Structure formats: C-alpha cells, structure tokens
Image (tube, rainbow, N blue to C red; front, side):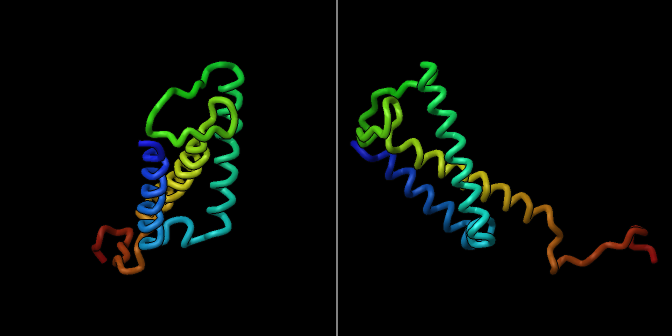
Amino acid sequence: MPGLYLLALVVSIGGVALLDRRFRLAFWRDRRSTVIATAIGTAFFLVWDAVGIATGVFVKGESTLLLGVDLAPHLPLEEPVFLAFLCYLALVCFGAASARARPSATEPRRSGDGGRG
C-alpha cells in the first residue's frame, strides 16, 4: 500500500510529540533549540545521504510502502521525514534521560553523613 511508511512515520512523530508534551522533554521545554537542533541534524544526515548516494553506497530499494515520490535519485520523500523524526526522537530521549538524572523537587535531600546527624 503506497504511503504506508510515511503514515507510520507521521503517527510515530505524533506519539513522540505527545510524550514530549506530557513530560516537557524537548519541544515543549525549549521550542527554538529543538527546532534548530532538529533542522541541523536533518540537514547533516541529508548531506550524509547525498554523499552515500553519490558514491554508490546508498541506493533506494523498491517497496510498495513508499509513495514513489523521489526528491533526488535514490532519495525518496520519506527520507527527510525519517531523518527529522530520528533527530527529534534523539532530543526527546536525551531530555528524558536528563530529567531522570536530575533530582526531583519533591525528593527529600540526603545528607552527606548517611542520615546520622
């Protein structure tokens, strides 16, 4: 079914965005930085893809799941969407790991003497 891969990407982006919104991990914490980092990461990986395509390392396989729209030879429309999703997901995961590492305001502080004093 043409477009199924793009639909899966959009649904996945939506799911990650809901988690991001709920826990304020990336975009809902700092919109500007998230958009800039996602754009830079996506651009970097598109250049990486272009080099791979030019050297013959990357080729587009045939799949009925793709829409069939190519932005360049061997670069389907879904590729930049996937790369943007990959970068956004990495930022959300980093935000989640950072939030987990920070002590919560509701946690009691522990004294350095092991509680004896």
